[in-house]
Length: 311
Image 1: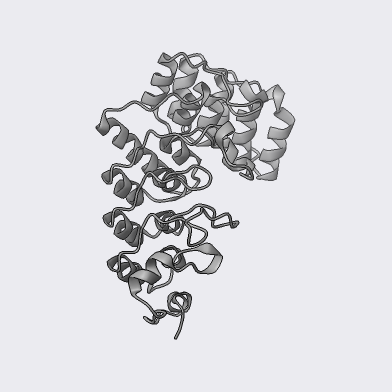
Image 2 (image 1 turned 135 degrees about the vertical axis):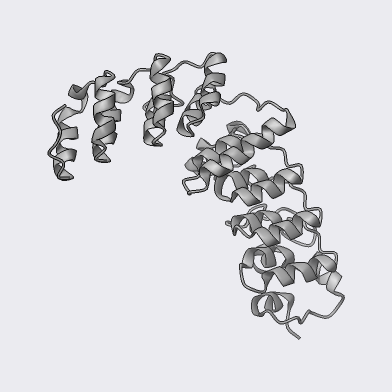
């Protein structure tokens, strides 16, 4: 008789001796994952059917355990993830929907402290975010503060600590970033709730990077300094707007008094690297000091065979 592990790997519907419910609830398989977690994680064509069968057999959609006693997994890569976390990691909307419909707890946190909505904001899709918002996921909840985070968390994760879903969406570099950001923002506004205060400069920097003029105004009204940075040598809101090609936001920040020369002249160098002569000239006329990075800018335009520079 094949084991439940074999069943999940091959797609055959053969279970070990005993009830299917028993296998779903108590069997622990590769790397301390339950059958439902493995099905949600597999990404194979038959995974959705496996999830359906296991849920019908009363598999617990919230189970995260290392052994029959129910202790949390400590295996690298599988640390404290429930089936919904796995489905979101695989960007599998049908499985995520099936788990949510089965009352998966959308507020359970994985090892790094992320809830389902935070995982989706960081690397999921707008459709998944809508699913979780409809399931009453808390869009305002923040990642744990650094002193409460588990050991062994990567530096990139630590940089995102204490962020909420709206802020995490900003870090996603996919084409869906803006749609996810707008979906989350609409959810916050619909709920009539206010996001807990982020480290002050981040609110302004996030909004600038997304071209969110209203968000910029809100941050400035809250007292955020125009040229503040989150950490030393990190971009100001103005540079972030240029980096993200949000030129209307950049102009708005300049009108409010932002320094065009913050970050040691990186603005003009960035535009030169893009071979963007139009905006290079615009922000030079707005006061950007070409002497800060002038030689490097000229080298970039020459490298890109743009010989029309006369700024």
